Structures are given as structure tokens and as C-alpha cells.
Amino acid sequence: MILLLAYFIRGISGFGSGLIAVPLLAHFLPLQFVVPFILLLDFTASVTMGRNARHHVNWREIRPLLPFSLIGVVLGVALLIRLPKEPLLTGLGLFVMAFGLRNILNLHSEKPASKWWAIPAGLSGGTVGALFGTGGPPYIVYLSHRLHEKSELRATFSGLFIIDGGTRLITFFITGLLLQPGLLVAYLGALPLMALALHFGHKAHVGISNQQMLKLIGTLLLGSGVSLLWKAWG
Image (cartoon, helix red, strand yellow):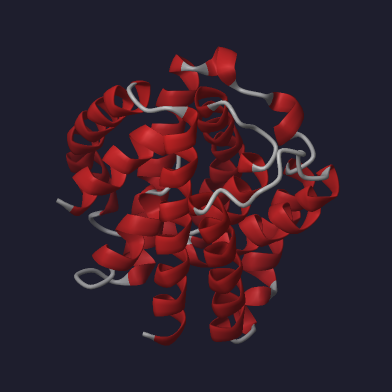
């Protein structure tokens, strides 16, 4: 049920699966198992969605994020793992909740966000994604303030995650996290559930407007912020 809900949301919005699945599955499974498990599924979902909507991907918006995202992944694995996790997650959670409320209340300006925001978005997305499997919010906050067409936004996020998630997969393989007993079996068993949920999520995505899409993203950001605070202090 957790996987069906997570990937139904992913099919609608293009993100949010890890933010839903990781904290809920962590109640039943070790976090060291959950994060690479969901990363494998998310990467597969991104490849599938990116292939089906590759003509909607805006690579010009992805390029400024990539170098800082890759630096963030390295920082997350090599350096920031030794820092206290609670302040990092708390700060990110409050930041994401603020932007979620802006989307819900439609308070954001029509003027696109500056490309300079790609620096903190890329760094925080890569870092937090490598540490906790929840790097989506900084990326989606940035991209939703640069892109306003729902199909382009969803496809662009999937294209970004193919690169970001691929980097994390390589890192997790080197550290042995992808070689855990039972991980491959769990991944193969979850694929049909993920495919079914993405299919119905895509059908729901076609039927909603851009404004409804922004409000849905705002709700997901608000929920993901609460999830990050729960991870920090729960």
C-alpha cells in the first residue's frame, strides 16, 4: 500500500515517491535498506517517465543544477555524514514547508526565479539525497519557480533524477549498500506495483490543470517538510 501510494503520487507530479515511501517504510525496515531500495525504484521510474516524455524535458533548466548536485552528492557521502543530522533536516524541512505554503496560497510571483538559485538547490538536493534519500524538494522548489507547464515540469524533474539518481547508485554500489541480501528480490517484487501506480498516476496527471498541479506540488512540499522534521526529531 505504501508503494502504491508513493508511485501514484510520483505518476501525477513527477516527484514525491521517496518522501512518502522512505519515512513510512522505515517503520518496518532498516533505513539502510529502505534508502537504496527506494533509490532503485525511483531511478527505474525516472527512466520510464523520462523515456515516455523525453520531448518535454527542458535540459536548459537541468544544466545549471548538475555541477552543484554532483558536488552535493560527494559532500553527502564523504563529509556531511559526520555532521549532526537534526539541524540539517530541520532547516531543509522548514524551507520546503515555506515554499509549499506559497504554492498552495498562490503567493509566488509570475517572474521566474533567478538561475543563481540553482546553486543552493543543487547543493542541498544532492547532499540531502545522498544522506537521506529525500533530495527532491530543493530541486522541485527551484524548477517549479522556473517552469509553469505541468508536463514540462514533471518530465524535467524525471530527467534530472536520472543523472542525480545514477550518481547516487554508483556511490551506493561502491559503499556496498546495493549489495545487501534481499535487496534485489525486494526490487524485482516491487516493480509490478510501481508500474501499476505510475500508470494510474499518469492518467490522473492528464486530467488536472496547471493550477491544480501547482497546488498538489505545494501540498506535497508541505507534507515532505513535515516528513523531514519527523526524521530529524521523531
